[in-house]
Amino acid sequence: MKRSPSFAVGVVAGVLLTLGCAVLMAAKSEKVTPVDPRPRDYYTPNTEKLEADEMRVIACGTGMPTTRAAQAAACFLVELGNGDKFLFDLGSGSAERISSLQIPYNYLDKVFLGHLHTDHFGSLHDLFVGGALMGRNVPLRVWGPSGAVPELGTKYALDRMQEMLTWDLSGRVGLTDPRGYVMEVTEFDYKGVNHVVYEENGVTIRSFPAIHAIDGPVSFALEWNGLKFVFSSDTYPNKWFIEHAQDADIAIHECFVAVPDLVEKMRFTPESALQVGTQVHTSPQAFGKVMTTIRPRMAVAYHFFNDFDTAAAVYDGIRQTYDGPVSLAEDFMVWNVTKDEIRTRMSIVEERTWAPPLGRPAVPPKPEDRNVWEERLGTSLGFSEFIQSGFWSVDDVLRPVYEATSEEFGREFPYPGDE
Ligand SMILES: [Zn+2]
Ligand SMILES: [Zn+2]
Image (cartoon, rainbow, N blue to C red; front, side, top):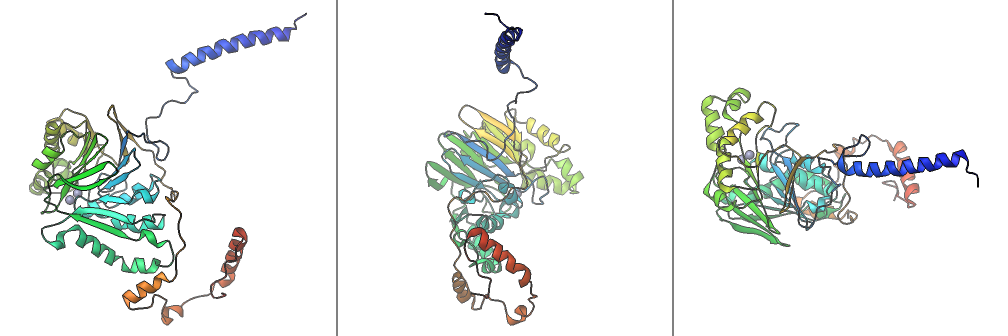
């Protein structure tokens, strides 16, 4: 049989291809090619499965009472391999950070507040109302400390927060699934030392007193599956943290702006910079001393504006007293914690995310739910004659919207007033 030149070319090409593949396969494991994807060193929300023995902590707010675009105020999300998720503090601006993580709101139903400064709970009403609107149809559960008198406790604050929302909630009742607009508040004794405040599903959360502003603030330790997460909220260094944050895998503690930057950037007098930066809050040097004493696998410093011209002073202060692993937290920093490894990365988030999928199906609203509120408020929630007199008709352009929707869903949606 006479072999054609093209056959020979084919054989040669085949051999070359085989050789080439072998070389490529070897190259894949040994060196980076210009065409193959490389391992990623950032976290993209909603793309990574959490392993059964893994804890993931995400900073959803790391800044100051005055929020800014780069940093919301205090908030840390803890996600566990058993499916549980916990929010520690929910400072101003943090709810929008949380929304970028694309987590169904039913799973963001447990919030632990260390104290009642707005930079630690100022976004609670955003999560409460906005979370329900975007699919949470279970109650929002909130834990927080008592105070020296009932008026200084969590229950007082959150009862009044819900009162503050009377107009907001009255205007929503009867229009959306009502089951998420319920807040369950558990207030515990702020003087409890290593006191269990939560114990479910293999997760134990304890509180211990913190020293900050006035009586009332607490810090938390979460333990699960042999891993320990500790969160100071705000505190001056104290004996309870030193004792009960021991053996933490990840220990998050406030660390304030360095004194010279308080003078230069916040226009504090040196007197008040020293007072606020070292006596009211924890200075970088004091943060380092705390971490040197408790020796966590990862120390996390937060509660300062983390910039190119502030971070070095904070870092240098910490390094005067601590030489272990440390993260200077920024919003969307992520720590994956297992017994073997702690991996620190930044998230790449999409700012234009919409509602995540529902945790369980919604139920249609019941218009009669309005009656309950009307009775409570002693007034009709319908518009007054005065306001009704202001309606300007756009029926002609809205009727086609109803018709198109009826056609699309194969169901008749009667135009209001036609029923
Ligand atoms: Zn505070
Ligand atoms: Zn604070």
